[in-house]
Image (cartoon, rainbow, N blue to C red; front, side, top):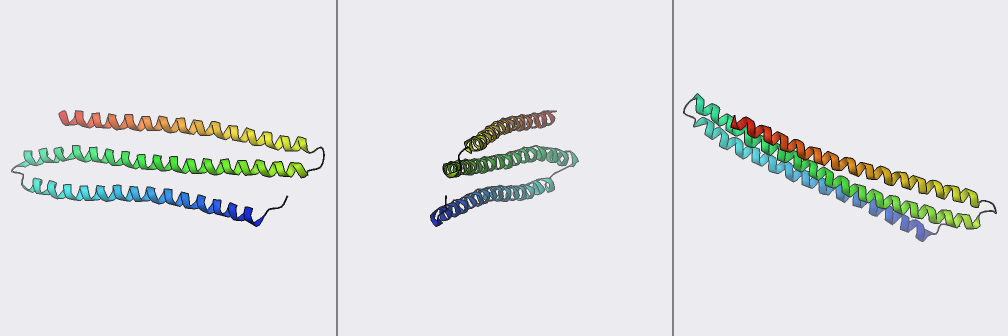
Length: 180
């Protein structure tokens, strides 16, 4: 069982492709977050100017206080929307990186089993038990990984539902406070 230069080159190419895929996913997430941040800064700046102009034009203290209170509701809603957008980008990126990791793990497992099969063909008699034990351990590890992955996905879904519920609760509280 010898490793050929073609096998080394293929492995290196696969590793470089995996690193580039992770880098591309991270850069895409960074770009989305930067765009969100730039839009938020621009929006806050434009609203600050408009709010300042409105406050300067207030005729009395009651109008000034009413304007300040009126400005707080849209700001809160935009902060909630911004947080939700950041969370969505993070969740999306996590999903992409998880898929890449799952793909690499599947490739690694396949290559390991292939190497194990080749090694078992050249192994001395009686080593079948050891090879079977290693394959059994690998299958158990894969099963445990799959179970943990399912639990993590369920936890992510629960967290997303909780974030959505919390967002709606905060919006409801803000609207109730505004109505009062």
